Length: 219
Image (cartoon, rainbow, N blue to C red):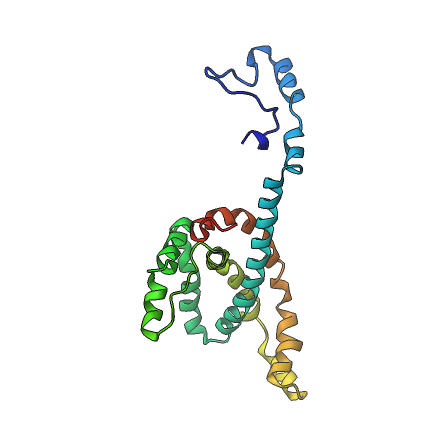
């Protein structure tokens, strides 16, 4: 932690002396702030361990955000096409994971992905060899996507659900196929929901640490 501090590294031996001499008043506070520097932060750029860890977190964040877009958009689109009476139940299914702690959900995935877990137990009767997913990068991606999927689905659903269906009818009247109407009408109109999606990129970098129990010692 010393490398992440604004203060210079020092050997800590009890009893600890306070970093600020409050008896000196303003002069003590000035002396405290004058002693701060960014040398330890600059050291991060010269330490290969921290550089590799940071780049690894960026990789996990970028891949997880891309997967969320690929998975979350079809879910949000499908929800918006259900009858209004059924949408509330689907929304509850999306929001329900928020009622459980993030770490509890991650450890639940361990029970699913471990060699003797629920996934391999379900695949065994089908004659499929056991999958070794736990302690891999794939397990980390699964944990991140599962944890942040509601944050991707809900903004997209809010936009798609409010789309004026008469626009699709007009596109059909002008000769567009359903696929053409989607790419020329629905997809462009859903773009306002995309800004929150890249915003998920930042928290992923921190959540990689919390998803590590599923990924084990994977680099």
